[in-house]
Image 1: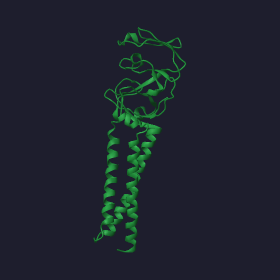
Image 2: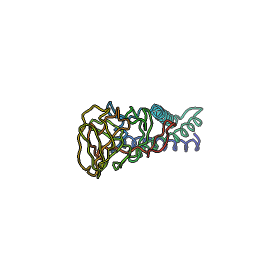
Image 3: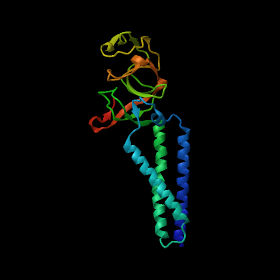
Image 4: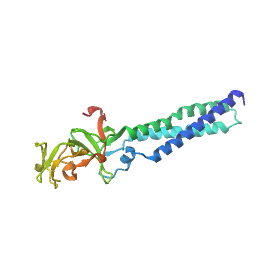
Length: 255
């Protein structure tokens, strides 16, 4: 083996070590699971109004994972292969492919870190927010528990069900919900649900405290929201919806 080939073998081993360390760090990072909305969305129970069932993203992830695994195995074979007429070309190919593939676990770790701390993607499921959001819409959520009136928020209920609703009253607002379904915010009638909603209403008659919110679905006919679940707190809020990224027919920022 020439000095150039020997040098390439050493560089290939370095790439193998980088790939191994990157995968170990990625596994450790995911196992920590510190406030990871991705895990919430994955483990959300039946009845959730959000999911990660995006086939394009799943397919892309599998392709990247297989590409890394393929390159990693080839690099190991190339490193230990010493007696082959095709060794230099094979080793060069193994090195080059792993050199590119090592970006994948690092990229995934950065992506999951961003997903945990800042933004997440989700897919709307159901009709409770029509005509603002439709079944199958892909949305971007900014992780925060501090929201205000008219923000569209993602809420995690006690059973891990995820719902998407709009804030209509927040801390400092005087909220009155009557037995017959009239909803007043600061003495202004904002909703008369009695004409089309038949469930029992949670009666409220007080000022909301800081960190308390009253939320409704835009499609009042089918939405199960604060009218029956009552006031929600900031601890239940995963974040607010900031963008619709698919389909293109109503792509854009959510006000």
